[in-house]
Image (cartoon, rainbow, N blue to C red; front, side, top):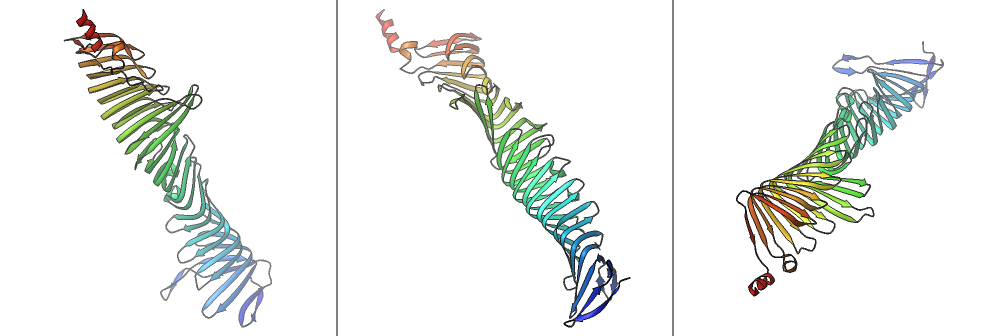
Length: 458
């Protein structure tokens, strides 16, 4: 029983409490003359009612407890207004709706819209998940949560943390979209991070889509693109993607860069296992010595590149469609190959073997540009010693030409040409030491002017 008495102050009716604890029940959910009256229940130590015109304002203070639909709320104060059909709770607010719990400084509950707005150092928890923000909107009928201002979300089942200016969560709390400086980090079984203007996510961050100005780190690679779709075992990038990886070695360091119209990554246990690049694709690997000075580089390009990665190192790469491979040593000597298909085997950042198939052509140029060897064949295989050719095998319409310039010819002789079905070359320091030919072998040598003069003198 409520004990007290009514009295007037300035023409306004007020109720003065005499008991320590008051129980107030307001409204019943019914339809009367086509008008819906909403049900809510509020308990408090004190209650004050003010009625002005047709509007009623009730203020509850002192250990307030309320039940709004199925939402239970506790606070230090609550104010109900019939004009706005809202209840405003303030002072250490705690709201519980099933497994979801929210705490903050204030809570505004719109009875008609069934919407709760929690503000001020908000923390929402549900099933181990956490959401922190300056302001959170809970839409009960739509199962949607909207957060704004310094948003931080935690999904323990996937080890995902998410930061953004605004966040909208749907589908049971594990899917949604983050906007404005959005950043997602996933660390349960892998190390994956994404930053973008907007990030759509599902399954607690196991799947994430970045839109505009996307930056990612995955398996040691740092990537930039316009759009990225990431799952637990794959990453797809579009919009001029660029990938970089920097690795320190005992003898220096290595920097790898990938560019293409589209890039896909296959990921397992936090490591990139395969990289596929399409559309004007290019992979460049640069080496540096222990003091950071460049010590050579290699490049592979084509319409489609597939690179197998082992422990973060690009080991086996295949290029198709306008395929081209270039390797350059620190002294600027260079090996180049073009073919319909090129396969490159690398180790410790160095190209060890290059194989071209389909009307392949290759060349070796000395550091000073004074010597050049030209190779051709249906298939070309080059074994590398450092960044220079150590052995060459040409098969099918094989041709090998030595093309010195006038600076080198007087010392090493003139131009030579060897052709056949199969040609093998053994080189040392870029110079041919032995050549073997099989099947219709034809050899030719063009003497220098000095050699012709000596021959005529004889």
